[in-house]
Image 1: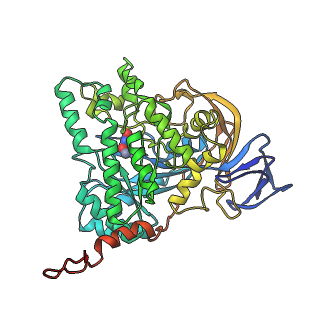
Image 2: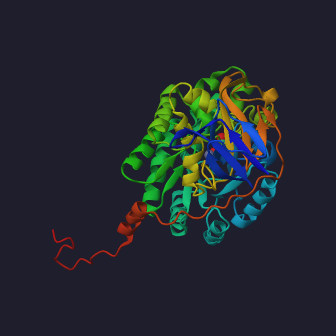
Image 3: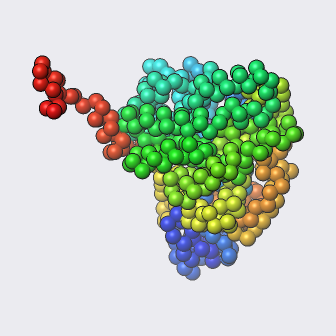
Length: 483
Ligand code: DUC
Ligand code: ZN
Ligand code: ZN
C-alpha cells in the first residue's frame, strides 16, 4: 500500500519547491511531479514539511512529590495533533538509582507512545556506577546526558560532578545538556522570600531572576570547554543566557540554545494575575520573562545563535499545582505546550515575519535532528527518510481551549489565543494520525529511535588537549618558555 501527498509545496530547512511525495513501508520512496499512489492526500494550498521534533518533554515524570499528568499516550497524541512526530523525553534516575534501571522504567512507559521517541539520560548523582553505565547507555542508542544545575537537594549536581560527567561525555562522543540555573542562589533567595512572607506564585519568578540563568549558562559553557565537549543548553529563556551562548558560538565553540514556545509567547505579567490558580499554572523553571528577553530569543532564532524551539512539556493539573498553596516552592514546576508548539510558533513567528517557513522547519525539526545525530532519518523530506510529515495548512485557524485539547490536564496556558496555521494531515512513519483536527492515533505505534554518538569534536577537543598535554619542565634558572 502506498500513499501520495499531492499538490503541495515541500518546505525544508533549506528550500521550498512544488512536488508530490510518495510513501511506502513508512518511508519516503519518491519525490517528483505527477506521482500516483493507492491513497491520495490532497495538499493543495499546503506546505509539506518534516514533522516536528520536540527535543524536551517530561511525560509521566516523578517530580516534586507527584507525577506529571501527561503520559506517553496523551502526550504523543497531543504532539501529533499539533504536527510533532517525535519527542525526546528525559529518563530520570532517582538519586542512587542506576542509569540502566531508570532506562527500563522509561522503556516501559514509552511503550504507549503514538509517535516515535527517544530519551536523554539525566545524571542526577555521580559515582563509579554512573561513570560505567554511561557507556552502556550510549550503546543503547542514547547520545545525550542531561544535568540539572538547579533543584538543590534533589536533582542538582555540583561543578565537580558536572566536570567529571562532561569529561565522560567527551570520551563517549556524547553531548551534555544542562538546565542552567544557579541552584544555590535559587535556594537562598527562596528561603529569604518565604521568610519575608512572599508565599505566592509570583515569588517563584523573583527567586529565579535572569542572572541565575546567565551565570549558570556561562559556567556550564566554560566547564564544557575545559572538558573538551560541546554543550546543549535547554530552555534558554533570557538575554544573559543567550548572550553567553552567542559569544561561545562566535568563538567557535559548539554550544546550542533551546528557547521554549512558552517563553517566546508568554511573559512575566502572567504571575501578577490576582487569580492564584492562573499564576500557579504558569509556574515553571525558568520562569516567564519580560519583553526584552523575548525579543532577544526571537532575534537568536532568526540569526541562528539559538537553534531549536522546544516545550519542556511537563503538565500538572490545577489540583497538583495547589500543593503549593502557602509555599510557592512546593508548586510543581512545569507547563504544557506539546500540541501548541508548532501552531503557536507559526502564528507568532512566521505570520509576523520573524521567521521564514524554512527557518520554522529548521528550529522545529531539522536542527535538532542534526544535533541528535538522527538526520536525515528524521527532520528531512528526502527519499529514504521516515515518512514523519506534516501537511501544513497556513490558513487554517482555531482558538486554543482546554476543552478541545489532547492533554490530560484541565487548563491550557495559551487558553483563548487564536492560532493561524495547523496540520491538515500529520503522518507518523506513513500512517495518517491527524486529518483536519480529527485525531486517530494508535497507542504503541511509536518506536524508540536509537542515536549513535556524534564522535569526537575537533575544536572543543583541542582545548582539552591544550590543558592536558605534557608541558616543558622548567630547569633551575631557565624559564620554560624561553622568555
Ligand atoms: N522545569 C520545569 O518547569 N519543569 C520540569 C523540570 C524543569 O526544569
Ligand atoms: Zn529544566
Ligand atoms: Zn525539562
